Image (cartoon, rainbow, N blue to C red):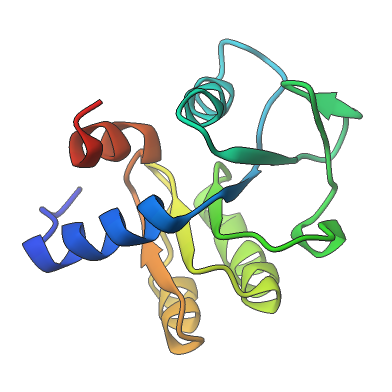
Length: 141
C-alpha cells in the first residue's frame, strides 16, 4: 500500500532529484522488458548519469556495470533499488557506506528497519514507489 506524499516530502524529493546528477540503479536488468531497464532508459533520457549495478554483464544501456555499490569510484547522488524486499537491508548497508543524498526503493521493495537505518545515517528515503512515475509527476514530464 502506498501512502500519499506530503507537500513537504514532495518539495524535498523535487530538490534532491533536481540537484542529482548520478543515479546508481541496483538490479538494472539488461532485459528491455523489465521495469528496471525502462526506468533507467527514462532516467538517461531526462539527463541523469545512470550507473548499472547487476551481478552479470559488462555493460547495460551502454554503461559499465558494477557488481556492488562499493565498486563505484565516483559520487552517487541517488541509489534506486530494483530488488526484492528481503535484499533491501543489505543494499541499505551498502548505500550508507557510499552516502548518497537519496535512497529510492521501487514498488514492492520496502523494509521498515532498513529504511530507519538509512534515515538515521542522514539519507533521505522513498520506498514502494516508482522513481519514473514520481519524477514525471513532480517535474511535469
